[in-house]
Length: 400
Ligand SMILES: [Fe+2]
Image (tube, rainbow, N blue to C red; front, top):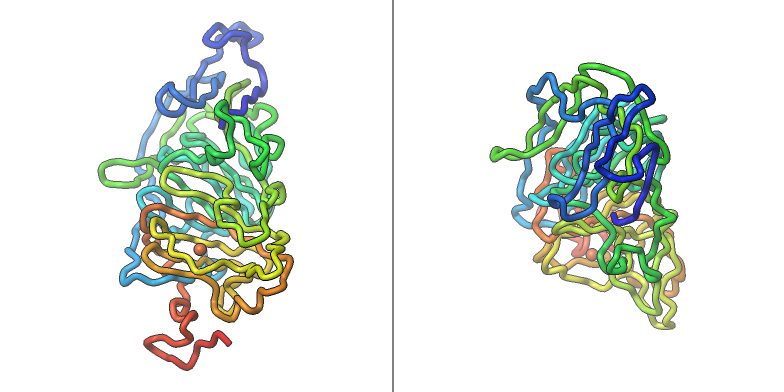
């Protein structure tokens, strides 16, 4: 994110001597994307950021994936998913492919282990709860409705102040505002539904003392996604200052200004972020279409190049009325299959001028598999709710 930020003490010139009050040199570290060719920050450490004293296997939560075959739209009820309380170790994989994985956890109030994702950026949507995320860049507060975006390889830990429902979008790439929202130099443009004032990064350095500190690292090998527990000689939270355009930040859905129209607006107007081969959008409470003959719910659509994942987090989603979808539900509408409102929702929407609905959408350009957590909470009747009858028990479905 090309939005410069400076926190704590940094020397006037980069790559020059920066010393503590006793005259000891700080250790400068560049965290940079795409080699040395994209956004970066310079961090000044008290200790040596590469000084490890141990490296062992960290057994990750179950990462197995099951193809969506035979092809069906799916309804997954995340509020029925039981998880342990750890924001990192107890995430259960719901959906995933080789570009992005979505997992879910209901935390307790104990802090997570120190952790970093060396595969890609994480964008964690906070469905409920509050607390802080302590990072090597400093501390960021989080609350319900936040997207907590943590750049790849950022050492951090979650410290919930209260139990928190976290919807973790883990990329194999970087996650950033859509390019079309940005000027060619990286400023958010006037037509973007949010601006730099809405992005909240660390404001001061964060320092902890310690030796032999374990950090869990999620990374990849030829065998797939694996974990390693690295032990650091000194505490990784030892930064006295940093500056640059790479850092964790939060953005809250309340600060997203929905774009509306005279007739139905397509999902790209709801986009928040993009990663490689996927996008993140949100559908939020808003005034809807004002043409006298408009149909406010979506038309049927075949997204021929993408799988569409909706996570229903607030209000009452108009297009899904009659489907069994409720708060905490996920719908997966895969590529190769047309989807749209349950039929009774279309007439019901006519004349409505306001939708009280909140949903987070992830569209992927490669098919999504089901994780073990997704399979555990599937409502298998969903696929038949448009027709009103399915192969097993035609009597139980109604769209009237
Ligand atoms: Fe859709």
